[in-house]
Length: 296
Image 1 (cartoon, rainbow, N blue to C red):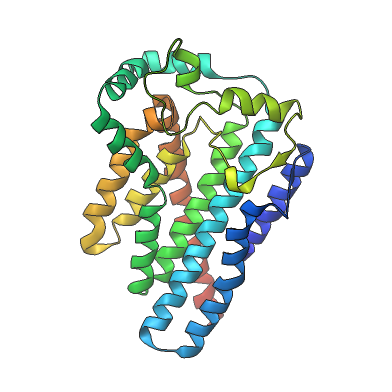
Image 2 (cartoon, rainbow, N blue to C red):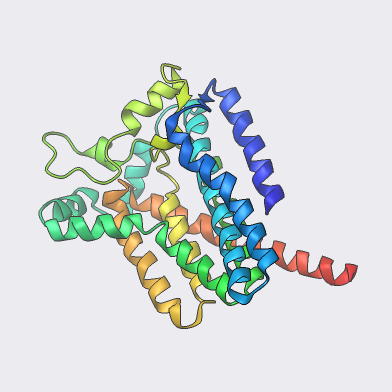
């Protein structure tokens, strides 16, 4: 996995260069990431040297969390040059597919806008995208399920690559920007960044990516939907926690159309991406096991 992260950093750097974007290494918003990168390896090394049961578990937790954070951060940063290198918007086509599926995004939005309780529950569910993997990876570390942790992390990385590749061919501003006109009764969690941010990336009026202020740019496929699908798949290996770790991503899926301002087809594509990623991650893990057995 470390080699994959290094390769991802290289690919992200090439994308930034191709799009004429840079990251200010001295920005104050980078300090938390520098702190994690500096302390995580030291903490893991100390835990491994300590050798006690809980120290070894903590070492695995640190490793898994750091890898997940790195993959998520690289994917989010990479979405900026991908958006900057893209052309046009696919909203008209995505909305037509939603109409064929008989999904009324405006009705869904009006329902949420009219009920404060749905708004609060939606925001909590939508933000659980980082809570659920923390629980999953913590369980895998506690139970010594290193193979399952690596499969999940590999699937997450593959899903991110597939999502960005597809997104480059169908960038969109999302249904909120495309369909809603007039006063805004409720501002979703994802707000209205795409209509201004994507053109700014394309015409190079924005050239510096602030890592501490990353905004969601990807519409189709929905990476929240891809993540939720991966979480549900991984949760089936979590024994008594599987029901909680299945229910939370399901709630996140329900919140994503409004809070993530996504078309229904975005969610369907995201789920499809996740299933493909899980399949290939499983093949990769099996190959590594066979290779290790042959070498041993």
